[in-house]
Amino acid sequence: MKFTFTLLLTICFLATANYSQTAKTQRYNPFSGTIVLSVEGGTTLANTDYTGLGVDYLGRLSIEYFFPAWIQSGFGLRVFGSAGFLKGSDSNLDPTEFRTNINSIGAGVIFNLSINDVAFPYLFAGIASLSFDPKGEGGVKLQNNKAGVYNTTEANYLGELGVRFPVTENLSLNLSGGVQISPNDWLDDKAIGVSNDMFFTVLGGISYSFLTEFDTDGDGVVDSKDMCVNTPSGIKVDEFGCPIDSDKDGIPDYLDECPGTPSAAPVDKKGCPLDSDGDGIPDYTDLCPNTPKGIIVDDYGCPYDKDGDGVPDYLDKCPNTPYEVEVDKNGCPLDEDLDGVPDYLDQCPGTLPGVQVDDEGCELVIAPPPPPVPEQNLEQLVLSSETSFEFNSAKLKASAYPELDKLLEQMKKYPTSRWRIEGYTDNVGSEVGNIKMSQMRAESVLNYFASRGIPKGRFEVVGIGSRNPVADNKSPEGRAKNRRVEIKRTDKH
Image 1 (cartoon, one colour):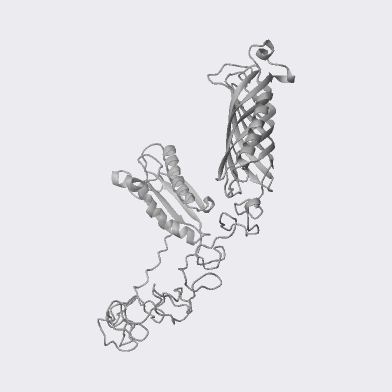
Image 2 (cartoon, one colour):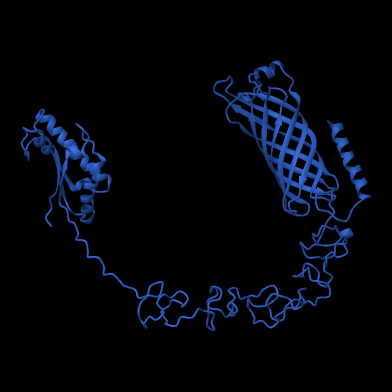
């Protein structure tokens, strides 16, 4: 591993020397040609034969070299060393917990991107030599580890996604997530699963860049090649680092608000063609150069007349007049009888002044308002059991709801009113059963009102059974009338 580290450093320095002889003027990636030292720390999450969530910690030191590049992406090499722990738990295994010391030394390839030099996402892939030491409670080596069943040093594959955020020209903050995959299944001292062990990392840290060639004004041209080193930030420059003047009007593009001005067209200090009347059409193409200020004009600098009535829109108070309709000086259709309906729509053009008219300009006949509907004030309701309850049941039918809702309005209108709900049956069956059924049906009505927001405390509920019949129980019709629920208002008002 020491040999690998030395070899990678040698490659880095040789690449730097080679590219320094062919350096170009444009640099888009600040990490180009730099050596980066990073210190990071974070958490590990083991994925082993132990099913419990195991979160532990890990620290890492790495050094990277990025090859010179003149695009927004770049490749580099990374050498790193890390140390930390993995752990897990599972009540179905013996022992129920493990904690493994891990140490890695590895190398790989890194690919990064630049997002406006504000953030630098990267992808890393590599290989590492992992040394691990699974232990149990009290730091005692686990059974297979102690017995030497497996080799505690192995080659792992790893991948990582991350992003760097520059703080200064040399210092940046890092955040990454990665995975390290074992070719074996012994990181937890057990090999009972169908897949190999692996672990995930979430790391944060700092990076410091060496051999950075600065671009003081941030125009993409390094200072050693920049002939205009004080160009304002974000300004597009030519290959010498000087602001571009695309239309050659003497105003650089970053000050030129009209960079496409035709050759020889007179411009102001902002690089825009002169527009004497301020209508947005430059004088060199304006056919109506004296248009009042603020008026919308067409491509030739002339005021619009969208409805073609001869009155330009900026004077036209009725800009949507139909074609060929006669208008006044304000561009509005004529209305000789002044009834608010223009003549071209007026079916009754001779309407007298002050007469109210309809949309066609004819006198409007207003119908008298309908008489007021007398207010209903229900204080009593009788529900027939045949139409209001399921057969031989206290369950309300939906057909009863409209009748009950009439009383519900009164109960809400008079929130202090009190009510009595009486349940009745015919004389068929035992009196005890009849009283029970009449009570249940009365309570069903009570529950309906309560479900609509009426407090139960406003009701008195009584199951009377077969007493107080209103018809003869000897006939089916009479018995049907006796099976009922009566709702009465009981308070004085």
